[in-house]
Image (cartoon, rainbow, N blue to C red; front, side, top):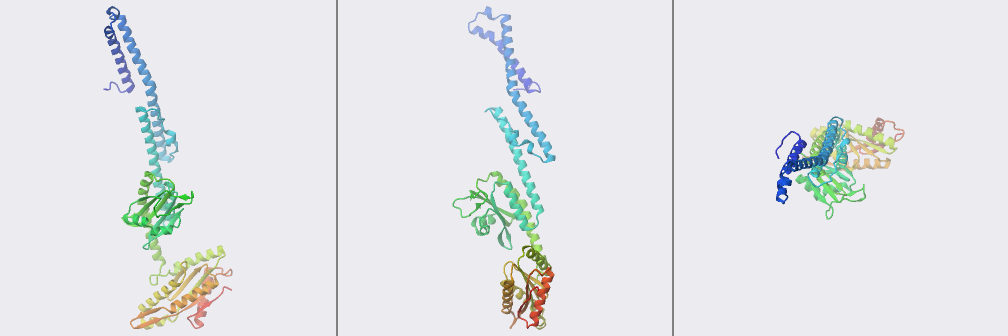
Length: 453
């Protein structure tokens, strides 16, 4: 219908008035068709009455339309003005609580265009809220990733963020580290280390695509300790950087994952891939800075730092701490006889023999030249003595071949343990060093244990 004025309701009034007048003009001839006498119908008074009635009907229709439709338009306009005001304020304050979908939604009480308009408005509000939630999640997640440089801390913070912003109730993050897929963070997962060998996890890493699993016949066991029942759905999300697989995230829920969860994860894993790549590079640099390149043992600087940490831990926990100081016997003669290249091979062989017999949590340090330091956290006097003897025996049984020559060496070992009388890490090292020289003075290729008192 063509527009007459710039106001919808003015147009409506004009059209309704015109329609009322048209009805008033048509009504008298229509009465003739019904058999009414012309003398009664075709009179100025009758025409005036029908025209007045037509105008009255038009006015009443307009008033009803204004009351019913206009009120809905005003309600919609007020709601939109409120939303606009809240959005304008939230841009600067970041407070989006003033217009959530529950508070600003319009009542949908009809199945016509008015109801469709209210539904469209409510859908817009929900979309705005969802958009803000996604923006907040991505902003928070990016902030978490930018604050963490250590790989373990990054994995823990990233997993916490993913659990907070999705429907997940349990999860784990695994990272490819030194060609092995290792779990760095987990919450509510039974035996997260077993995920590394799972077929679903390995397929996701290989294909680089998110996989959604419905728990049932699947062999991936994930339990949520938060609710105490088995999860119903599992998401396995690959983490990569420039198409290079770096790890995987496993998320579980007792309900179902929505499409929004999956789309959000798909966006977040891009930033996570970059952060994990940077953390791995940082980890490698730290390792290079801490490792002696010849023997692959920790260097002296890193080793003494670890000694201070373990010493402080032993003091706080009032627990044991053992250290060994060992020196290759007659190493100068090996260098003089076979050359420094062979001497380097002997150093590597001795370090390898030590690593083979110490525990996983023990720390092997190249202290200087042919001298090594071994930290034994949690080891008492008997444990320290046994560890020293294992090292002495392993080194004596190690052979380095140079042409037709078979070179064997031995080590002298000084051992001690932390006691209350030892006040500093340096004092502990001095005691072990004194024990080492006693072992050398006693004939070499032997272990000497010296107490702190």
